[in-house]
Image 1 (tube, one colour):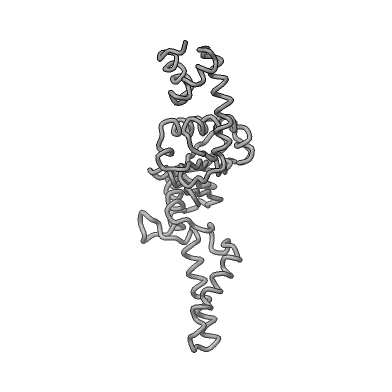
Image 2 (cartoon, helix red, strand yellow):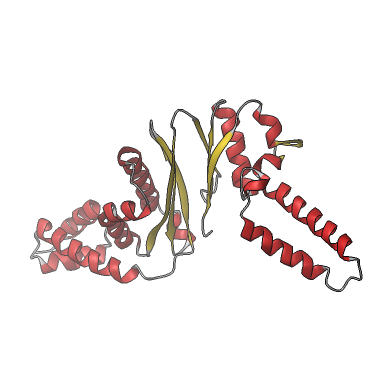
Amino acid sequence: MVTAQLVKELRERTGISMMDCKSALTESGGDIEKAIEVLRKKSVLKAEKKSGRATNEGAVVIGSSDDISFIIEVDTETDFAAKDASFQKFLEDLTIYCTKHSPSDLDDLNEKYNAQLLEIIQKIGENIKISYFEKLSIDGAVLASYKHSDNRLAAIVKLDSGDESLGRDIAMQVAANNPMAIYPDDIDQEILEKEKEIALATLANENKPEEIIEKIIIGKLNKFKMENALVEQPFIKDPDKKIKDLLGTSKIISFLRKKVGE
């Protein structure tokens, strides 16, 4: 006989809906252990059906161990699910897992964490996707991170020297201003070529000598490079200073930035 107490106990142990728990208990003749097996089998099937649905919301998490710091993005279908307590617990467990096991890349993480992912998909009732995992190794350097309060934006910066306070300020800068590269000359040449095409198009109808147009283009490209190179950007806490003014003898080696949906 399936009693309300049995349904409640199964619900507490699995987190599955009362209706699904009652159905599983009925199918298993009131045996909780067998009902859990029934729910697991059905959970995988339901989760796999949901795994193709679009995910446009979610959260980013950051974590670190003695050797690495990392950013993970986990996407959901709705903002409501991203704020669910079960989802937050999933993020916490995922962060602990990556801290302890340091997956080699996103594919490795998804492969090793697939069972837990299917479980949270069933519990939340939405498709959930681990869409991003990147890490930076310490290698004797300084790693510092920043995560925005809405849990949708994070950054990690690697410095050859300096303190964590400096690193965090620069990580905040990376998160806020989304630089394309550390130095102007490091910006991808293809991006610069596209900017040049845009600039040429804006001058197409202007009756200016070719040498003047060339100077204007060079000026526009130099401005673009200054705006999008991290060391040349005005510091968000003190726009009178540039990031390079904060560094002293320290050097930025690399950075990571992730925003949900980008």
